Image (cartoon, rainbow, N blue to C red):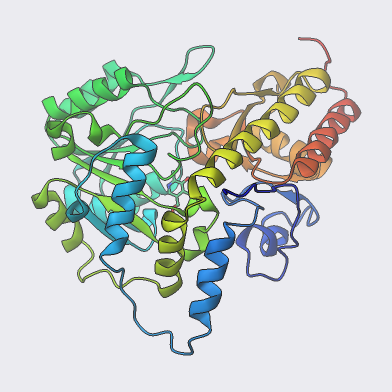
Length: 400
Ligand SMILES: Cc1ncc(COP(=O)(O)O)c(C=O)c1O
């Protein structure tokens, strides 16, 4: 009998080496008690099966170099089939200690210094950092807001891809922080441009399990063998099961040449983090894994609804973008008529909420805020209320 999961509890994370909680006061010294809604992990317990597997392995007193067993790739294959109806061969799977590591490897493997790498801003900031710090040329194809959702500027994408020195596209699918699940048509158009101009695709699909009703994640590599041939897909159980601290991700590449080039960028075979392996196997192998994901996604949607309803009613100058995926909400604060520093002061100092400013993700994120709603409903309710109270105390307009 599959179990039901409860996401209402609020475990105390202080003193657990949590980046989000233990470093909150360093991040927001002006308001050390701000509720942390910044780093992208959740305040929910992971699957009990993961805790059990880690506890059992921890009881063995030797924590030596470790490796993923062959069964790991079988679990990835089964997961991709179940969740995305994507047929992969276990031989396509390699591992890295985290998706950001894979991102950096891809940048170094597929573009030489000075060559161009495309991203679609505003986007998860390690995309830009990896391009710039590896001395590759940043080609930004800013996403555009069409009044309802953010869409790709295909004309610009084609122009950037056509530049002879452009070698790689970093795709964030689903998109963080824009909460977009790209449609089949959008993905096909992106892939066609890349195929035409000989640009490889690194598709970061770390958020692909947390998809809201009415949307369907499609791995871009699953669209055709030709597209798979130019694509490296990064997946992980980390966001899905709240085990990001275990740092273990599965990279899927059907083209053996690309796979070889990619792994060569690491310089040695991936030696896996021990508890990463244990958590990874336990997560994907748990008979209740899908149930957990489905219940979690429904709970997150409920959190979004509470936030959206409260702000619409009591702080209408802040608009929550209707999310298609992820627990990272994108708040449009432009109607408040303040610069980014003032917006940050409002959220952190006046409302007591530790958020990330949109401009961290790109210049076109100015006027926006990213808020992590991966926490119990009671926390969302009190944070939404605090925003509403601070909004009134500040004297913002109540009509728009
Ligand atoms: C789009 C995206 N990619 C990668 C990561 C981080 O991946 P990892 O912790 O596996 O390096 C995050 C974390 O927020 C993310 O949002």
